[in-house]
Length: 621
Image (cartoon, rainbow, N blue to C red; front, side):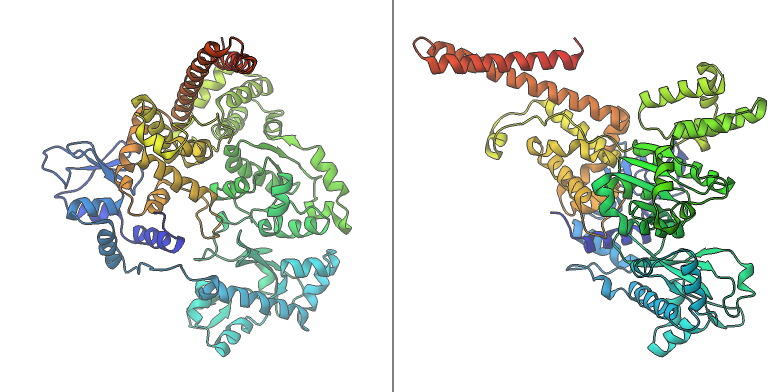
């Protein structure tokens, strides 16, 4: 059922090139009407006078609230519109998008010309570091205490100051200039002159979670030959956004830190690659950096995949570092892990604290790190009036990223104490925050779940035994909740063994496969679209939109999931009690003169009492 990664990527590319709104728009008269975060029109699939067909809130999903009562993605629309099969519909869309549907596994990294060029460029910069002109870079590295081992491990190099080294090398090797430009390695002036993007700089490869070089970070080097002009430029420059490099999706050093993170669960997040290199050299291999950008859901997802339980932000001890810390908090709070901030002394950066390879000063700073809320409350010191109101707003905005209601409430109480303002006033100010500044993040949740209720001891028994409609409804709600908020997937994975509905089981399998997928090309941020793509031709995919709509009509996904899991646990406990009571009655009939039956009856009674006691505790009685 589940498609390989190359097939799923082809579907994603088709959807990126041919929008649902475009295809539907060609089948209707007039324009869409925007209402309630949806695009509405009269349904192209049945006759009607008033609009019941809606696209959104997910722009890749549609649903007909009228006679059809069905929906899906663009593939499902083409299927319904033209009465074709899944593959025929996909082929039609692929031809329109100009995308070839793979019939086998996708190409390897070696076949990707951009990745091959980036890897080759890393080797070129490395050789330049060892050349005569690279002495200025080697002297700088020596002055910063960067060892030969660190230079080798991080692939550090040097870009020639002439601005022609890489361009000429590519010409000699027959590499198209367009590829150099696309990879962010070269530019062309208005006069048509081609030149290297990086010139006379220390070059640090930026690698993704697959350990592939996808871009470079470059530090200006004063004293580099012919660099009087470039010296006026920024101190640090990264590769611009390219098809291979998106700074919001890459954590620098993650490729080298991931093993340590999985073992220790503590991520030290810094501001720049020089800090990370110095920290790794000092043995703090759990150190990474976000390359001068705010943390993003992809950053958080990488941390989550490594099993991180604590994150410490250690940015420079200046105003820029303080701003970076605030940006970092916003993207990381939804993880729900321990989050703290360690502020170096003024004028110091993390690299200064591990000078000479001694981790002691930085370790001492980490031990004194402030919990994130304490760090933000310090910004209120000495403020009053309008300035206090603005500063409180900043903290209130962060509270919207805290995933647990109880945690948010305790933070609000702490904010009231720290600001000297009543909690009621803070609640009102939070409500009054402009909507565009409110968080829309959904939070990852604990993977601790109640034991799965079993619908039987085997597939045959499952098929032959009638299923309680309420149980089917509970599974529907739980699976739908995970579809609407895929961070809930770990909470539903245990349901797969007892799932009585084959379609819902297929959705669970697809979600779990995506969550557990170690394929480096697997999506970091799983969406409902990824699940539909993974379902392939399975008939249940045409019911996914209805499942999503059911959840949207019912409740917030997390609340719905917890209610359904509680119900299923209650049903499981009830079934176990009934089975134990029946067994006790059976044993009591055999107990006279039968010590073994008496002993087993006693064991069952103890188990029954324990089950009843757990149920009473769980219900709060």
